Length: 150
Length: 391
Image (cartoon, rainbow over the protein chains, first blue to last red):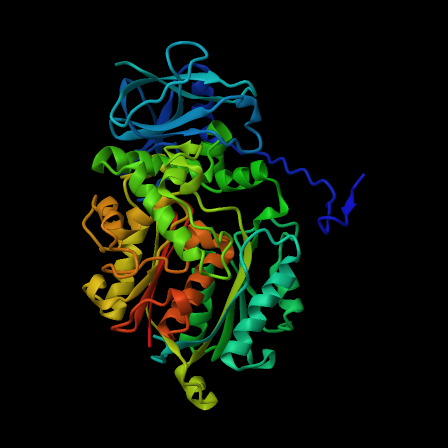
């Protein structure tokens, strides 16, 4: 029942569910790559510009002639946060999660920083060396996870 | 090129910020518009163009420009709906400003509003997080708006040694000012201990580093110099400079995290237009975008109030307080007055106009040059806007 409260002077709207289609056809290799443990960016064959996250078109020279480049090796944490207040859709996390951006050569990627010990939450530091892995969260979404290599 | 007419702000209005369950978006917009029209001494019939700014999504009314326009009696006078995330209000003022500069209108109103409390906090956090780059960030990593600024704070602290105590000092100053501002959401002073001891929302940002979830509206009436003469108005604040810029939506595509390029570029553009080469000497009072305490510290640096990396020292030495080199957020800032996204940029104009007209009461800054500045950021430096106002 939609209620009306005389105490608060408000009533409830009808429920409105928004669920969008995400058109990933032109960057499918990225999403397929995550399932294979690989992380890809794109590079413009015409001007050499590199993109992470990947894109199908070059924002600089307007070419659409792009190639896929694997992002690998050792990365460096550029910035991070640990979220204590969860947004709608991430209640499953259950405990504060750590989001970081790390640079791998010319590419930067976002990921969740996880500690070596299962279930333990530790914080990275700016400048910390990390490796990137891929995996699925509890909702089935594939993503990048960073682990310290120090 | 358009006309060379100067554009003046002849009236401003602002509602009380806070949780405004007592009113619809139409009703709070009306509150602000009525005050602005009365302040300008014009009627709704004098308005030729209305611009309605809101970041949107959190209110049940999804396309709110026309409902607001209807309620304010402006049907037929626009509206143009503007969105620039948390810098929406500045973009709305710019739309009114450029219409006048172009000679299309000679009297226009910019209305900014947001009702963020129509949804619950997890939903509000999701709307903020989904507004960066949904597919590559929120979808995978559950980013939030506090989280984005927290990442910048972590970078700033690591590079320059900025401390959580320095960040808390911004909160203490702004709460102290808001306590004297009847329009503020929080009218209570806080102690440094309370701020530094508060819980983390997004490490390293604590509860008292964050602006609240706010409802509110603000309006500004702008007119051409010719129209101002015709109306015989002499209580005018002129738009002397305006600058804008933007940056990437995706955080991994940023070159740096310890500052906002959009702030630097927007301020340089505004300074050039207004002939500002030494902001500390030429500007008397500033409204800086302190959605989070680290944002005010980075803004001191990005706008050239101090050297890069010395923002922490700037607050610590009281330079942004009354009696300092340049009083900042005398009205309480977004931190304590509140931050209803679409309203904020217009509300900053409201506060600086009040200062330059010497109507700020207990919060009046000392004026030497009669010039003020507003700095309004959308997202995490996704949009940057700076206005220089003068009388």
